[in-house]
Length: 237
Length: 316
Image: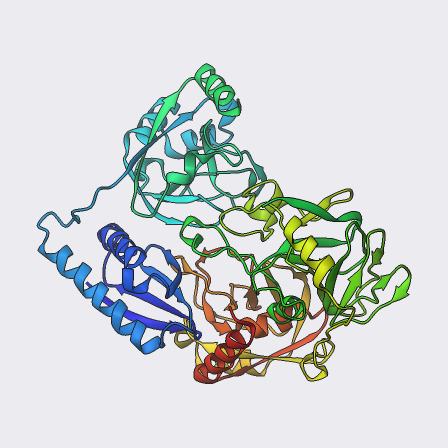
């Protein structure tokens, strides 16, 4: 697994991994993010870390450290994480990974694109629901808006490209598919993903999606429309 | 901390937002830092009040705001030129002003620049979310931090601050030394620090970016500034999303640069030619639609020394 460190402007360092697939990289990115976040010697130095598929962007306080010193420190952390990774036989790091289960209602009233996906994939709606909710996804990145987690990989049979033109308004909690990724919209927003259901827990500023983090695992649990409404009432109390 | 209302908002203006230095340490959750569009003007407003650098003030875009003062205190006005009056009497920009309960502070439209800062002794004490008072409308983190200043709003300061004001102030005003007052109407040359995908661009594309004359488009806000001008063709296609630094110069497929600012998305997949410094981001944020923008390469070391000196001076 190869990597290099790039200076971004004068106050950020980008750690970029090359020659490895996203799934293979995820435990490394996750572990490195943990290490750097908890590094006592870097606590006053690092301002923000943005982990994503193949990179971590580390911004730092230029009054606290010289860039070359931070590069040396970060390089040591990367090497340490990669060594642990190589020594672990099953290629996963000895870290506790959260599994988050999100209820989703796939009722057609909440799933404007489910029927067209059914035609596109030549599968019944029940099959699509079954496939979507029986996969355990990994969170590869968070962005676009707070707590919007890019979850992968979507089973090849139910992959579908984004809408050519983004929808003006996607409801809060909407569960979408875009190619090999799926996601929950934490709040109402314009968006181009194909909406196949809605989660009742992701309304407005609800905390349900706060537990999403790069590297965590997510599973969807199908619920009925009645359950959906009951759940929403509970959340809104 | 117990608080008292310092202002009643009579007219909120076109677009006025509470800002402190920003919301740091949450970008891994997709939460953008926010913070002042123009650090220079924001920090001077706090400095001439002897406020600490992170104290919250009002960032006023395009002006037309009217506030009624509810306590005797001291304010500072910095940034864009709005022809501010207090009780219908014109007052100087880049200066502190003692105000009394009942005074009316009125902003006209922007004569030069785009956004100004109204700071108050001790800073505004609006409710924080994730350790910051900065307003980022799009992030919808909390009611207070996602709502622009609105008509009828009462803006709080701490009670302790008010009593200190009354007992300890002399009626002298502090102004920003003339040397530090920028000309927001001058043509702007942005210093590009080449990084990210710079080396994926051909030398012709690099040359085009550095020699093109751009103008600020209508798509220019706290998220980013879209420039218009000659399009750069055959750019690298979208890449795997990666973290976006402040001031990133993004080149999407249409070949027109977008400079990403305080309210930017935290990750993105468009190729980026590099970044501009935080100070250049501030200068850009003061330029109005149609202003001329060019790029030149700058030495990252020089930019870092400048920023270090700036941070030392303003103590943040």
